[in-house]
Image 1 (cartoon, rainbow, N blue to C red):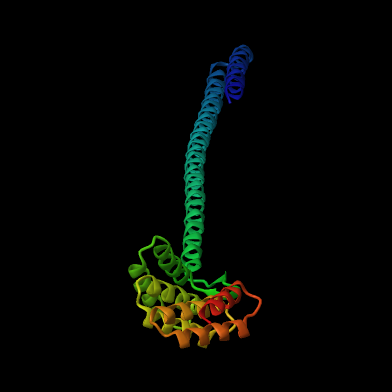
Image 2: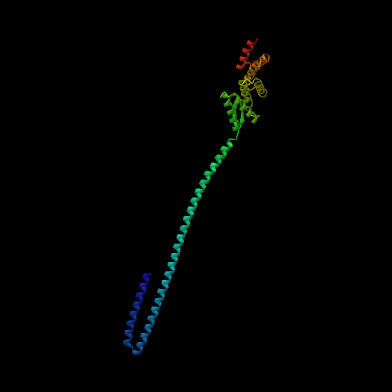
Length: 259
């Protein structure tokens, strides 16, 4: 723009010089009137040229001002876009962070639910030759009652096992529970109740692996109750039902001594 301005100024100077030269030439060739008219004409041309130059300069200045405003507006728009982009980037980063945290929480919730559900899901139990399903709480309660029996607190063990059977009357642990209840009662010299529970065991599970021991225990209780006849019968039934067991061999030995 500056180069164009300088060019226009130079052009004006040249026009002025040319007018001056032309004025001198006309003064020499014509009279005063003609010279005066020529001067006036040249001045008018000079004024028109100057006015045109001023108009061009003013127009160019206005165009420059408009261009500057446009550039300024464009710069503001660029800065606004940069700010919006920065906000969007920050929002995206926040969303990614929140999504990651949500996924972690969801994973924790799923694991927690699975852990809670696992406490109620039946598990496979193998006990005294039997395989059955039991709830985790059911297994825990039986194991706790049996642990009490093994401490030697037979009264407490009897109570624990009875409470277990009342809570789980159809449990796969039922036959084994009756066996340990009978043993706890025998240990506390409650022989009649002991016989009753051993016979319940034989009634619900005649082929239970503890059945021979239960039959031998019945004979022992009957001996303590001075029912020798009943004791002999119990041992004979044991030998007949389970002849190859250790309990049957013990019964044979005792039968020989009772004769």
